[in-house]
Length: 69
Length: 411
Image (cartoon, rainbow over all chains, first blue to last red):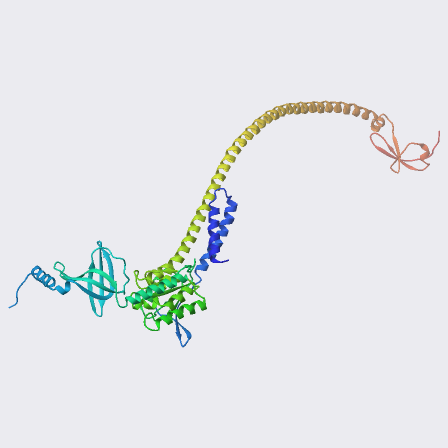
């Protein structure tokens, strides 16, 4: 599932959880689903390694090297 | 011998010199706008030509003019004695010289606009994991951008090192945008350059750059020059940032917003479940309390009933026990009585029997002079059992006689 869809689902779950008529049992089930989606979303957000790469085009060829900030 | 004057005397003298110089009352001057500000209801412009600058004032408001635009200003040169500075009082502003470039740019802008290049540009995606930055790797701009991105989020940054001014800049920037689109491994692009003169920003007004930016399927943030400078690159990009730092902030804020949404969900989910648990706990407590109170009543009621039954049982048992005890005592007494009576009967009967036995005793009979005859230890009751010469024993009441039968005569 795409990140955006996961986050949308998480928000829908949150809204449903806020329904006062929802039973505790259903609520806990939804809460567990919500926690799983939260973990997936956070994991997806932390996938990047934070690398910084310098790319140059020389003679129509791309070269890559780490960028020293 | 120099003349000594006060500051006001000297400034008023200079002002007079300017006023006396008729040529300065109506003059035209051309230059490139380097500053354009509106303050206190008046318009302040600085124009430059070569190494020289001229501060100008146009009383009243004037439409905003871009930095770098070459203009022809008509007005008069004055000297303000209070500030001690020369100023050009502008009456009319017109485009001049490269102002033609400005007009050319205006026409190009209108043409690209008519083609729809400024419309439906992709906006920033909901999540940014990687960004390509098209800028000079040797300038300060990239450090400003990285400083913000590194502090705020973990994101992969691909720096496409290009020239941002000069002859090849236009080609390099357009090429970089196309290359990034063909690689298609970033979520958005930042095209960045620090502020500069109008001519320095011309690269970003080039048609090739504008078209490359407009054709990019990857969202582009254009951060060229200062906030007051608008280029064709800005107009063709989906997002325009006033400065490169603002562009970096925009990228960071996309993920910040995601974290905020997730945090909002976590907070609200926790609260919702917590509320439900508290509600359930309260219901459970009320139920338990009700059961407890009800049970206690029932238990007490049952206890009292049992206690009453127990007491009644106890009373009944006591009564029965007493009765039984009396019965037992009576029975025991009766048995004892019977035993005594029986013993007496037995004793009496023993006495009678004893007397009978005594009466029947052979010794009693023997004591009357009778004797018993035994042969070889056996009692002899008939003479036929004895033969002549048999040795017999004659048992008397007081002794036994040994005898030998001399003869026998049967009766």
